[in-house]
Amino acid sequence: MTEQPWLWDEKTWRGHVEHVRAGRPLRPESWPGGAKVAVALSFDSDHETPALRDGDVLAGKMAQGEYGARVGVPRLLRLLERYSAPSSFFVPAVSALLHEGEVKSYVDNGHEVALHGWIHERNTALSEAEERDLAFRAADVLERLAGTRPVGIRTPSWDFSAHTLVITRELGLRYDSSLMADDDCYELLEHGEPTGVVELPVEWIRDDAPYFMMDRFASLRPYTPPRGVLSIWRDEFDAAYADGGLFQLTMHPHIIGHRSRIAILTELLDHISGHDGVWFATHAQVVDHVLGERP
Image 1 (cartoon, helix red, strand yellow):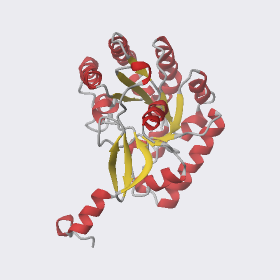
Image 2 (tube, rainbow, N blue to C red; image 1 turned 180 degrees about the vertical axis):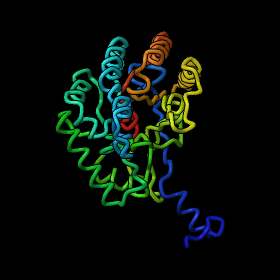
Image 3 (cartoon, one colour; image 1 turned 30 degrees about the vertical axis):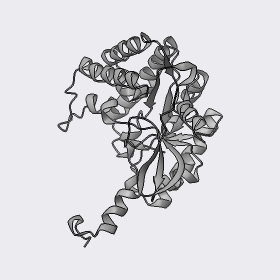
Image 4 (cartoon, rainbow, N blue to C red; image 1 turned 45 degrees about the horizontal axis):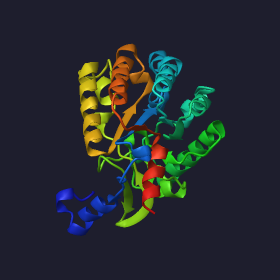
């Protein structure tokens, strides 16, 4: 039987805490062109993959995911073009293979394509060998479809296993965007040692899914009205602008892409664009900039 955590000695509990940790802060002295804030919008193009992962393959779930590719993505690409906002699309390989031409549409519109697993798998349910195999296969698929190899990863569901950072380094990736130890970028440590991998942090309060998810057979309901979410995100941006830091947002085409929700994203982008000194950038561009200031 596994020993209960309250019986662990200090070496054990300290080892768990220090396995993957935040290292040196990477907030730059300035943003390109003297901008006051970096805005890093991101979209996890999950589509049908979470349901496929769970074996929930009936038509209802497939249709809900298909909405993201069929309606959400084109709607988002038009909106991002209007605001000249290059963004990052984290794409499970199965999503990329299911929806022919979608990855190319991201690239053609000046956006970044980054890793988001094979079939939105749960990394902590996999062996190290399984996680590595899926990650490398996914990178190969995205490289073939996008024309360039991904430089960043967001783990599906932000599910970071004991092996994820090792595999991330083996892939030669420059950054991860799955953890949340800061508002701004930082370097990841592994067992206290610098890794050279940048963390561009996420947070559930800056993610559309916790506010808008729905499961008719469970208690999961979208309790927060869209404009309540807009208020939270606007406050997050305003604080980042005042700090001279990073505003990062995570969204999903099959969630944010609906009419009443794309409306609040439009209002948010209007609010952001009404400020002087805003730099819209992909996650990779942000990472390149913060690393360029710190060798």
